[in-house]
Length: 105
Image (cartoon, rainbow, N blue to C red; front, side, top):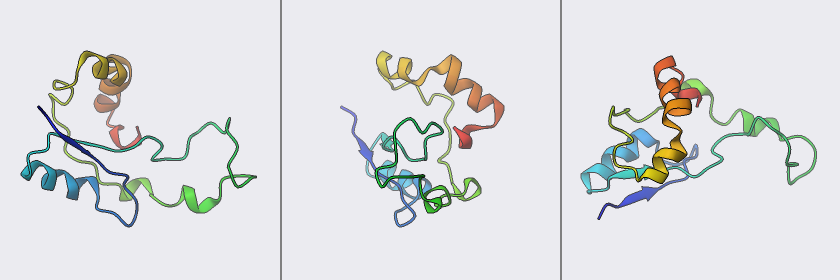
């Protein structure tokens, strides 16, 4: 059986590159970050506080300050078929890697 860990990364938490090796040392096989770690491009849902999303939320994590964990060529090999389908390997995952835009994904 494989075990993973989940972490909501913030400016006050460890980074993925700090947490990843610590989890590997303890036998975890994956790390998961919750959905919505960024501001959506679409504003179909209103901001709960009303009006526009405050600027502070856009400036929390400048792209150049984000440190990504190392990418493994066999990164999707341990996923079940449903997970691989969810990752859209040919249309989302692979093109982002090949274009060098992995951080922007």
